[in-house]
Length: 171
Image (cartoon, rainbow, N blue to C red; front, side):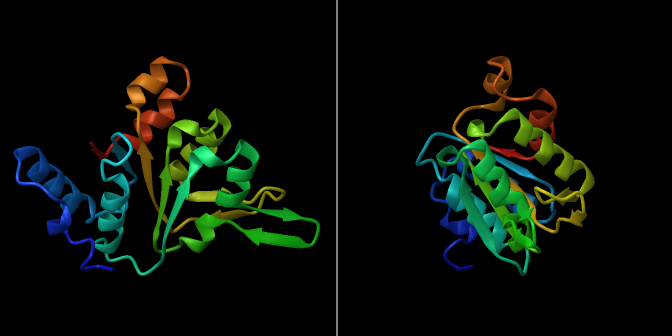
């Protein structure tokens, strides 16, 4: 898969494409969150895969489309849950030492934005139904079709979360 997602597979010869290649290359060198912005079909998934496969991570790449799930389901899927004796790890657990790519983040609730912000700030999270904190070793990549400034202006996105994930933006 690494060859399939080489930087050279980002098609184009324009200055804009070369700039994207440089940003993607630099992004691969750290574990900071990444924000990918562009319309459907613009290559966000390809770029997320390229970043993952060239970051030197040994874990899996897990892709989640946030628009297809309600708030409770996506929170359980991401963080895991505990109900009685049953404990189910979440996708953050399975993405350890790898990448979790959350597509269409414009669909997530403000409550989930708060939980993700806390995760990014502390590197820790807890499963639903328990207060036991776990360390996260997953890199997060976020994808959206709408610029976060528009989402914040429209009241759909929290400014503090948008600023936190907007550090490494690729359009």
